[in-house]
Length: 349
Image (cartoon, rainbow, N blue to C red; front, top):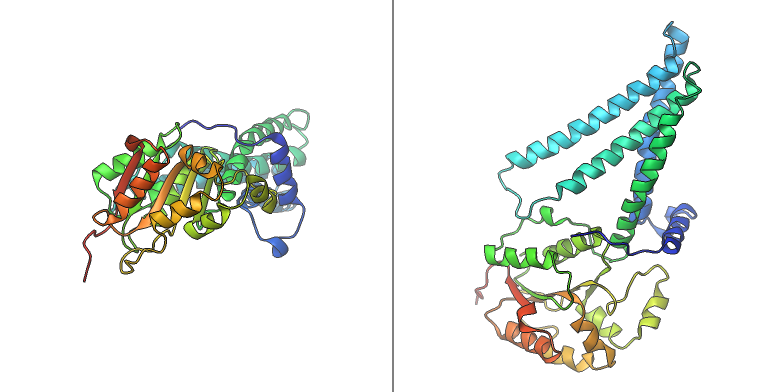
């Protein structure tokens, strides 16, 4: 998938102002704020110990340029730690008894590690530049160049965090973390959905409770959020209420929203039905269709969205037939409707 620019500069500044001004105890922590705090922490973990080591070296040794050595030591120490950290993770993944069902995005892992290393290095080199006199005329060039590079690359990840948090997922999950059983044919459906650049692709997701339905839906859609697509998670009952509200009303409820369910690129509609051992339908296809007509733009919106419907039990029941019929009735192409069955599809009486 190719990353796209979802956010305007004004929207990024709006989020940055929100994250920097205000108290966490009052309003909670956003993913974008956590990212800023994390990188600030990396800077401080190199800068502050370097300052402590500088005092020791300056007062108790005859070492020339103790500031330079202090900054370089903690730069190399933390860079080495990050290299060890990623090597251990890759080794554990390779030796795991439970291999990945969906391969991790190693490009993301490497990029994230390089950014962390960059902020550690920025902290150490900034202290070194400020504490040494021998190289004072030119050494500041290194942290300044590094700062602007990190500013550029961090902007990209900051946008990604905004896209993830405005999707309102119940939890954060990458697709490579999803560990439930899935058939090869259903796995291919997921992989094709990940590549879906056109509109109107629908997955009907079935399975009993604890089969990983919600986890799979969240993980797949979160991969699109990471590539800066406009995504949204909501339950079936919440969607019912929003079928009656215009987009203007929905946007007015959240000044930071990137989209409504009608304007999202990818949707998760969860908890339509709970699944085995509860076989009764909470929301039937007929009931949904009845409320769908609450506003004339609703059917068109569903036609143009890529949606994972978390429907409950198994494909052997009338559930698949009824929801497939509903999607066809609003002009969804049959070849764009796919069903995935997770867990045991046999009803226990």
